[in-house]
Figure 1: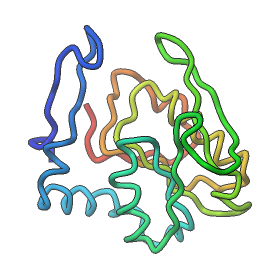
Figure 2 (figure 1 turned 120 degrees about the vertical axis):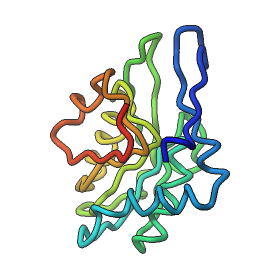
Figure 3 (figure 1 turned 120 degrees about the horizontal axis):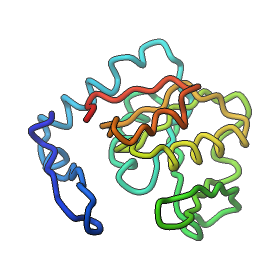
Figure 4 (figure 1 turned 180 degrees about the vertical axis):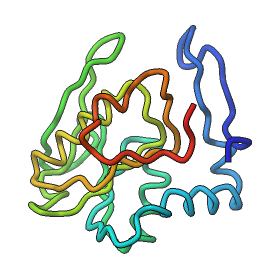
Length: 168
């Protein structure tokens, strides 16, 4: 799978090394391999909802929801969802960002899988976990295509089960 991840230097800003998943998305074989890995440790977890994080997290979150016979719940940036929402803000290295979810996206007691493409500093993942728990969801796993371990993002969500097939 690593062969399908392209490194882009100085994107989205100077000094950042971006992991581009579009070559992976363009290969049916790589997507199947990736899905197999992401699903491999979810047997008998009884997932009710899969939360996908805007926007690259949507690609595999919807596929995971389908395979797990679970609902899909999008978490988006402010003012992108049409119904009533709750929000969670988190710090970025260059400011503050906010994420939102519909108030009826998760019901109390729902067993939730959170998926995003990458675990970096952990701010986004921690904010999503906060949203899920505010709505009464039970986080079964935080699931990522890849983890940038040198940024220590897992420390911010260490109380949850974390899975990433690729670790850099």
